[in-house]
Image 1 (cartoon, one colour):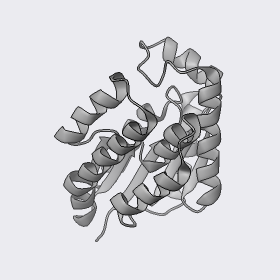
Image 2 (tube, one colour):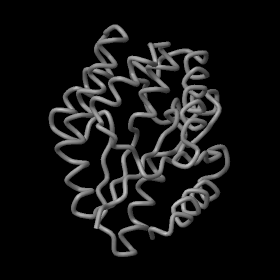
Image 3 (cartoon, helix red, strand yellow):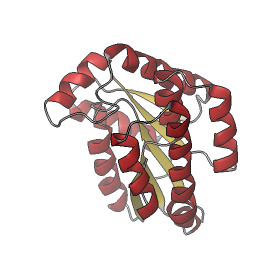
Image 4 (cartoon, one colour):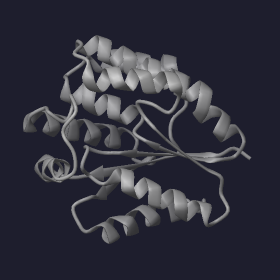
Length: 204
């Protein structure tokens, strides 16, 4: 039996990481093997690249190439083997984030990202993407309350408005895959939206 690949997307501060953990426990309670991972990262090599991406200055092409290099190793070493044995793979960010942050936020050439996506992923897409949509201002307030910002989180509000628009474009291109969740309400309300989206697929 092939597994299922669920990705969690949204601006930092939207609460996706905490709900990813909650969904992992919920699925394990129903007998599934669950693999929790993240991007950039998920393998030893990809985690090294993550550190560079979050803290080292670089131009937008270098940034995009490093993101996809990390993704390729992640797919080959962790995601594909887990899916092949029937696991549920929950990933904190995937390619939608690249189109949102590098494509939307940085204004990088989307046709180049399209080519890299096709080359690196060879058709692999998530079975379900949960997009935690939240205003950049609210997201910034939540981030400031819990941690110092990294290189991306230090960007201005206009950058994050472009990121949000980038996510909206990706959602419009794949409405059967991307489910928009309103991340503004209290966590219990957001969790109910997460569970409903998964239950609608009849995987649990």
